[in-house]
Image (cartoon, rainbow, N blue to C red; front, top):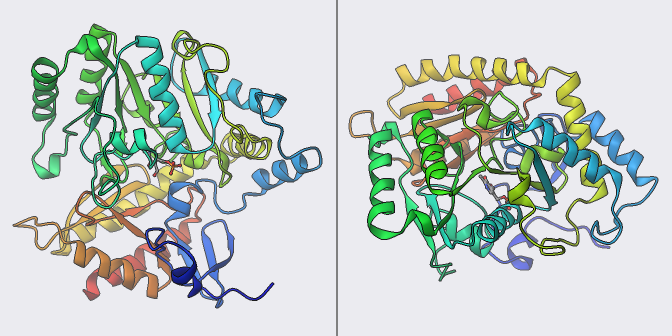
Length: 422
Ligand code: PLP
């Protein structure tokens, strides 16, 4: 086969499948990436918050290599394999839901969300769904309908399921308090839809795509009460917050609230495609036999990788390291917040940190332009970052939680220089 040049991206692939980097990645190790021209980058994108255990973690790789000696695919619904059951067993015990839970393994975050909704509708025999402004739940039709950021995700792709209602996520920096969010939710449930016709509320414990905004604890606790009072299923979408991203294994641990169902993906299998729906057994057992399924879901390769991820977390103090990583970043970023006129807010939990870029601290006008310039400058200097937020003006850090501290410091130095150069 001929050598493929990266400029073929624009002629061979649809332009909607846009890429941030304009060279091909050639190799990667833990928190470092090299492109085809030999340029080295610190990877604070981490395959979009996937590589929590770093690129090619040795334990993950050895589990995958071992599995490849036996078989690569079976379709679980036809020929079950023990890796999927072992992983489900582990997730059922590790995720902080006290009641007995069961797990269904699929391929992607969006597919997990689709199934969490299907199961909730089946169990409650209700149709209405509530999600949040700024929330992101994936790109399939139901997941996209639930998503609360229109451009570029939803524009032109509708109509979406009409039973979906969006309400406000607390966003203290922009003046939306827990009280405001509660008021809007109460209003929705008293004027537009009936609680007793509502199947589920789905929420990210920390908004990811929506701007790295941790939810207010009181709001999540309020949601739990509303759901309990009205028989509504509470779904935590922990696709991005799971597997140590917030400094604890799961985001729910920060809020002292248990959901009824959780969706997990991204960091679950160290870079191999896998996702899960874990939920209370009576809910998960509602759909009838073969009502749930997937051809590639629960891939034995991905399940082996996921067991490797759990082993790495168990043996290597990754959570403690991620908390330290967050502290090192926070120290530097808090100084920048004081000193730099474009940094309006620095927020997050543990190493899941977002920096909101504004025109100036007084008017707080979101500045996507400045955020983009900073990200480009960082890339020139060897640090990979991406933005998020409804206005595209929040720079987020989502590299491996195994990044050595000297590389975290190196990244912070590059970021400081980039911000100061604007
Ligand atoms: N849910 C959340 C919170 C996400 O951040 C994402 C992806 O970014 C998804 C769902 C969709 O996951 P996937 O891209 O694996 O379908």
